[in-house]
Amino acid sequence: MTKLLTYVLLFFGGIIAFGGAAFVFMYFWEAIIVRMGDPDQSLIFWYLPILFIGIIAVICGVSMLIQGIHHLKNGTED
Image (cartoon, rainbow, N blue to C red; front, side, top):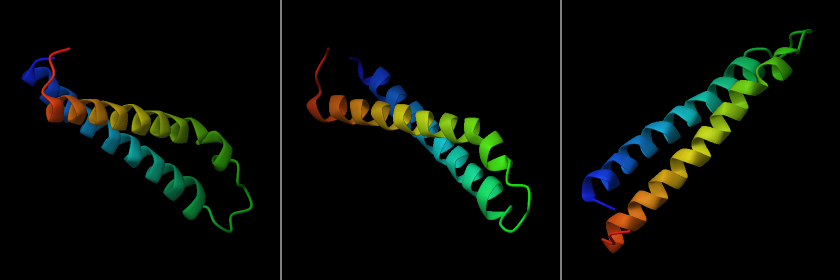
């Protein structure tokens, strides 16, 4: 794996992981915290796709970061 591809992997992995964490935070803030005490709690259900997108993005971003760090440390050319 070339050095450029390793740094691109690290860069986009960080962006995707940060964006996914923002989606997870957005779900908890908008669907749970802001709606506390409201009689209609349906947004906890309807905002679930935002939570799932965030979780998947965090997992993908962290795996890209781990792979990039692994290739950066080892300096291997796979």
